[in-house]
Length: 406
Ligand SMILES: NC(=[NH2+])NCCC[C@H](N)C(=O)O
Image 1 (cartoon, helix red, strand yellow):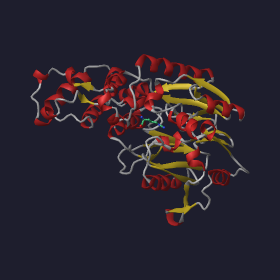
Image 2 (cartoon, helix red, strand yellow):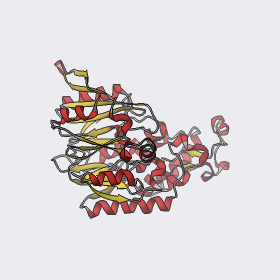
Image 3 (cartoon, protein in one colour):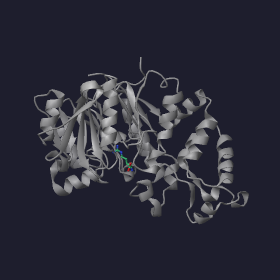
Image 4 (cartoon, protein in one colour):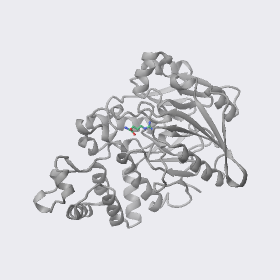
């Protein structure tokens, strides 16, 4: 029996993984926001209040919420892998000087495992290491004006992206930017050592794979169909490789690849498209009409057959692949140029469905929310004005581990 079961985007959510924003947020600086994929600096206590409320609302609906930092700690302890983890984290940290590596390793190993996990997420300011204690390398001296020895990982609360569950398996991802690719170490250790997740979980992708793919692009439309965005973050080659592997396992029968172009504002497919009911989707109007969609299905001799869909109308493609007479696409903020741009930017289309027709949304997108309610959806509206400064919404902040089958 696998600890992972995710055969749709809308089946009743039973167990979900999140990360509570931590001190990594207090290592965001205006000069380095681009490097860390942020557009503003959240207020940590406000973001934590909003995140705690988000978790409470899911728990009120009967969802078991587990935290990445806790699962990673349990996995590292279960595998007696603290030094292995620290060595790997240091090798990916960007620290150049051997003496600094030694000092940082000693500091981390002196902490209890949970504290160590949180510190690896937070990063190290240069001032945390007494400069007299280490012989600087030339590289260190050249970088002395950069205030961090090790960058923080402020995007970790977007637990949707570093790995993605699908069927009874997982895609541990290779991510677009270095700042986020480092995040995948936690999922790697969970699926390597955690007693609940180290066995009976199919591994469809690995952080050691070459081509990039991120969980915001990976949607489980049904027990048979995956939708994956070709985007700023996900390479078409990665989709082909993943499709071949899920087909080999008999896990899915079709992968729909949506070409959404390479745009920061549409960084992932789930920023412009999410499933909210058996036959209803939120959509950003800019992708509704002329989207190139490719259907990947099992071919001869284990190959993948790829066909470009003739129709560029998403509604037709979805109805056909999901075996529905028709689907309803609900445009973000009603589709108006100004309103939909404003509300998509604040993740009006990035909804989390916790049961068919029951959807968690940010309260700050009133036009989209009103439209969703008019389509008969029950909304759970949560504040997110600090959380959204990282450009992510309720779907971004969650990774389903168990959903009931439909
Ligand atoms: N699934 C999502 N839409 N995730 C949003 C991630 C936002 C994050 N700042 C990034 O650029 O990666």
